Image (cartoon, rainbow, N blue to C red):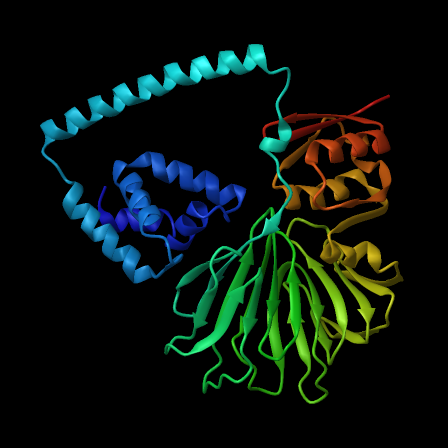
Length: 386
């Protein structure tokens, strides 16, 4: 396989996300297929892991490593054959070992210890700069974030990414923060506005605000606490609408796999911009865009049900089980399957801390919904009891 063909198979940012444990299910699946397709891929990953202390890699450095691997790994056919025999022997040893381990687990462990496999989410994300550089964000190593000309624009420490308000730039430069399934992160923008990003969320934002509008672009769910500025409205764009504010607290949920987009206002005032409509929303209200019908409704809600995830709590009130499981799936990074359609519509109510042991959480959900829940690795089957 030629180097250029390899490059087209998988993006370098995806490789880094997988190496650092912040990729989603689809990316991991693609990464594993790519990893197994060529021995050169494995060598590249080994090299990246060994030189990943700073956790920042540019596309140029990845391309250079491709070229080095392509020139260094090519061997005569007889040598390649010998290597394959060595790998085959190693694989055989692994197979024999895995059989022994499987038998030991089967006869000495009464059931799967779920808490060792399924853990609650944690603070983790990736940041992609305008020049393509990628940072892995966590609490292990403080990081400085620089713009395309090398000026420091922000710092990442204690699970919070802070942008510096004094930075000036003639052009608007955008960065993108992406939180995987099983993750969350806190971002402080250059104007002082704070954004809490939920699992499986992406936010594109400027490193500094220099125009008459403060605009960001959201996919997923985030809670915004916007710094008041009457001269510069803050606008959150999604794939379906925009929310215009001047200083307020509100939650936006706009996942591609949800039937609805919801904007819940905690305090202040906002205007929902949808098509040619501009609707004023008051505190305690929620705007709901139904994607199939493209209709918009405004309803009174308990805002804690939609904003308390930021405080480490799941809250449900007469919510269908399938909607509950969508939220839980993102946080624990699991997949739910329903044995029948009826059980999906069973409503449950309650509150639970987001750091609750998964097996215990499922036990309580099963009792509330009168359902049987079986856990197999990261797949969960739900069957309604009759």
